[in-house]
Amino acid sequence: MLLPPNHWLPQAPLQPLHLDWLTSANIEVAILRLDQIDPLISGNKWFKLIEHLKAADQIGAQGIISLGGAHSNHLHALAAAGNRFGFKTVGLLRGHPQETPTVMDLQAFGMQLHWLGYGGYRARHEPGFWQPWQAQYPDLHPVPEGGGGLPGAQGCMQLKAMVLDQLGNLGWSDYDGWWLACGTGTTLAGLVLAEAGEHPVYGALAVPDDHGVAQQVESIVREAGVKETAYELLDASRGGFAKVDPQLLDFIDQTEQVTGIPLEPLYTGKALLMLKQHVEAGKFEKGTRLIFIHSGGLQGCRGFTSTL
Picture (cartoon, rainbow, N blue to C red):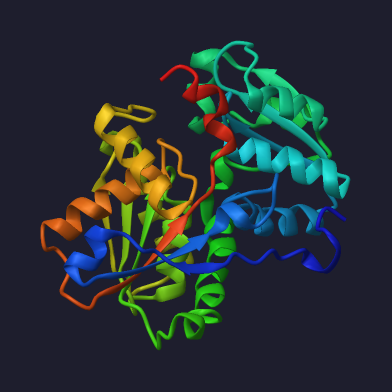
């Protein structure tokens, strides 16, 4: 069994976000702290993994093989889960061997690593990519980059129920939409499936438009057969994935000082700054209530921040 006992379902607290620019606009935001679900298996990554693990169990696989970079939050959560719950993990990494805090953790957790170079990693979407790896590791179940695809999205659908269970703690009876960072679009797609058009989902893209997030979301929605959708993708990449600038870093620093909530500059920080810009531009009516997802990813910026 790859699944942990009782399907180990961590709970994330839902907290009010107190910031001057929200108060001035009469907008309320509650932040779902997925960064707090576990010290190692953090953020939205576990929710994207759960249905993949169920599928692996059903075919009798002994573990998971997946892809990511040298700072990958997905591979970090996967390796930590494999270490804790006793299943085998293999990581196919972008680029050439390098030592980052994430890579050292992957090795410490017992993940077997293969470095594909950059050209080899770009081939991950080509037909036949998985064939040699499945021949080498016939007892492992392949999982797309970032835990993506319909199973990854289905695992994220439960985030809606997690929020609904806690709305009363805020004194809210309902909310008006979701706001979150998007890397592959899988978590956003899960919320779109869960909402089925009831509440809009706003995705702040951490990658440029040409990374195909919109196409991936549409593909998942079509495969799921959901007819009613309400979502919008917004470019928050600030020039490209992992591109940061003084304005973003100053915003993160000031927000962390005010709220005490740790942010990172690749996903959550960019998404929150984009929300601030939308609020200040009057894009939302007064009294709007939004759910903001803190998708974790704090471990991934350990090596990155030293180069800023």
